[in-house]
Length: 106
Image (cartoon, rainbow, N blue to C red; front, side, top):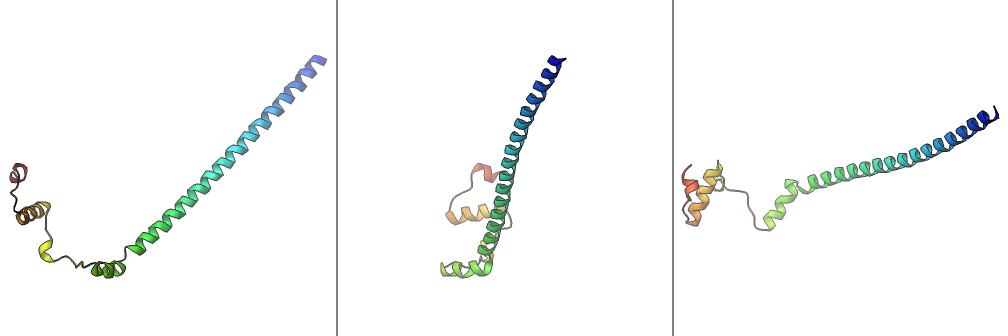
Protein backbone atom coordinates (compact mmCIF):
# COMPACT_ATOMS: atom_id res chain seq x y z
CA UNK A 1 0.00 0.00 0.00
CA UNK A 2 2.88 2.29 0.80
CA UNK A 3 4.31 1.79 -2.73
CA UNK A 4 0.98 2.71 -4.28
CA UNK A 5 0.90 5.94 -2.23
CA UNK A 6 4.47 6.81 -3.24
CA UNK A 7 3.67 6.09 -6.89
CA UNK A 8 0.54 8.28 -6.69
CA UNK A 9 2.52 11.08 -5.04
CA UNK A 10 5.25 10.86 -7.71
CA UNK A 11 2.63 10.86 -10.45
CA UNK A 12 0.90 13.91 -8.93
CA UNK A 13 4.24 15.72 -8.63
CA UNK A 14 5.16 14.89 -12.25
CA UNK A 15 1.72 16.07 -13.40
CA UNK A 16 2.17 19.36 -11.53
CA UNK A 17 5.53 20.01 -13.24
CA UNK A 18 4.07 19.06 -16.60
CA UNK A 19 1.09 21.38 -16.14
CA UNK A 20 3.40 24.20 -15.04
CA UNK A 21 5.44 23.75 -18.22
CA UNK A 22 2.34 23.75 -20.41
CA UNK A 23 1.03 26.87 -18.65
CA UNK A 24 4.39 28.62 -19.10
CA UNK A 25 4.52 27.77 -22.82
CA UNK A 26 0.93 28.93 -23.26
CA UNK A 27 1.70 32.30 -21.70
CA UNK A 28 4.75 32.72 -23.95
CA UNK A 29 2.71 31.94 -27.05
CA UNK A 30 -0.06 34.25 -25.87
CA UNK A 31 2.47 37.07 -25.55
CA UNK A 32 3.76 36.42 -29.05
CA UNK A 33 0.23 36.45 -30.47
CA UNK A 34 -0.55 39.74 -28.74
CA UNK A 35 2.68 41.22 -30.14
CA UNK A 36 1.74 40.13 -33.64
CA UNK A 37 -1.77 41.54 -33.22
CA UNK A 38 -0.24 44.88 -32.18
CA UNK A 39 2.01 44.78 -35.25
CA UNK A 40 -0.99 44.09 -37.48
CA UNK A 41 -2.91 47.00 -35.95
CA UNK A 42 0.07 49.32 -36.44
CA UNK A 43 0.41 48.20 -40.06
CA UNK A 44 -3.30 48.82 -40.67
CA UNK A 45 -3.00 52.29 -39.15
CA UNK A 46 0.07 53.01 -41.30
CA UNK A 47 -1.82 51.88 -44.40
CA UNK A 48 -4.72 54.19 -43.55
CA UNK A 49 -2.33 57.12 -43.09
CA UNK A 50 -0.61 56.36 -46.42
CA UNK A 51 -3.96 56.17 -48.23
CA UNK A 52 -4.96 59.53 -46.75
CA UNK A 53 -1.64 61.06 -47.78
CA UNK A 54 -1.98 59.67 -51.30
CA UNK A 55 -5.51 61.08 -51.57
CA UNK A 56 -4.25 64.46 -50.36
CA UNK A 57 -1.31 64.51 -52.78
CA UNK A 58 -3.41 63.36 -55.77
CA UNK A 59 -5.96 66.19 -55.50
CA UNK A 60 -6.41 67.89 -58.88
CA UNK A 61 -6.43 71.36 -57.29
CA UNK A 62 -2.97 70.60 -55.91
CA UNK A 63 -1.53 68.98 -59.04
CA UNK A 64 -2.82 71.53 -61.59
CA UNK A 65 -0.69 74.52 -60.46
CA UNK A 66 2.41 72.32 -60.26
CA UNK A 67 1.78 70.92 -63.76
CA UNK A 68 1.17 74.38 -65.22
CA UNK A 69 4.36 75.60 -63.55
CA UNK A 70 6.19 72.84 -65.44
CA UNK A 71 4.63 74.00 -68.72
CA UNK A 72 2.04 71.22 -68.98
CA UNK A 73 -1.44 71.78 -70.34
CA UNK A 74 -4.63 69.71 -70.42
CA UNK A 75 -4.80 67.15 -73.22
CA UNK A 76 -6.18 68.51 -76.48
CA UNK A 77 -8.85 66.63 -78.47
CA UNK A 78 -6.31 65.73 -81.16
CA UNK A 79 -4.16 63.99 -78.52
CA UNK A 80 -6.89 61.54 -77.51
CA UNK A 81 -7.53 58.26 -79.35
CA UNK A 82 -10.63 56.10 -79.16
CA UNK A 83 -8.72 52.80 -79.40
CA UNK A 84 -5.18 51.49 -78.99
CA UNK A 85 -5.00 50.78 -82.74
CA UNK A 86 -5.85 54.38 -83.55
CA UNK A 87 -3.22 55.58 -81.09
CA UNK A 88 -0.61 53.33 -82.73
CA UNK A 89 -1.57 54.54 -86.21
CA UNK A 90 -1.23 58.17 -85.12
CA UNK A 91 2.10 57.56 -83.42
CA UNK A 92 3.49 55.80 -86.50
CA UNK A 93 2.21 58.54 -88.79
CA UNK A 94 3.91 61.22 -86.70
CA UNK A 95 7.21 59.35 -86.67
CA UNK A 96 7.07 58.59 -90.39
CA UNK A 97 7.42 54.85 -89.81
CA UNK A 98 5.31 52.22 -91.51
CA UNK A 99 3.39 49.62 -89.55
CA UNK A 100 4.94 46.15 -89.32
CA UNK A 101 3.32 42.95 -90.64
CA UNK A 102 1.57 42.26 -87.34
CA UNK A 103 -0.06 45.72 -87.30
CA UNK A 104 -1.09 45.52 -90.99
CA UNK A 105 -3.01 42.28 -90.49
CA UNK A 106 -5.52 43.92 -88.19
